[in-house]
Image (cartoon, rainbow, N blue to C red; front, top):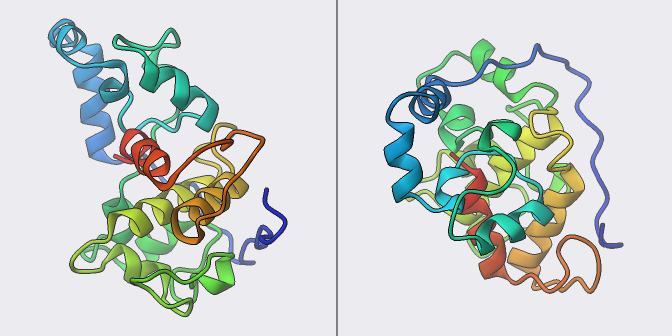
Length: 198
């Protein structure tokens, strides 16, 4: 991880792990069902992996292929959507269960290790980013991946440090000369998010 960032400690409040969304369940049914033959013949490897928590290093090989990755898509855990965490129609209790170790009422960019962006000051609550109108996909999708990572839903493929590094690339113009993000640009981060966020 870059020297300018440090991983924030989880909030002290613990919650039970969340269950997958019905959208994820429908996707599994579609991929496993009879329609999968049609999907496999039409979609590229990167499109088939949409919503899967692939590692940054696996992203490069998946996005480079014009056919399905050598690893089965089901190999990777399902990443959540911004709606899973930001849905306005759920109770506070259900939201806290989904957010797990992060207190949705107090979590802001700055107290979770993120910097301000052109759209959001550092004091912005993560929930406000997920519920913003218009929705800001760059910030919102990175917050979504962060919540998956800090709650262990994307382990071992995406870490909190990975998310903070991608944030630095996207919004601070940080360049990495080694590690999984060597040579990545904001466009690479956006393409990766298109792959992993439901």
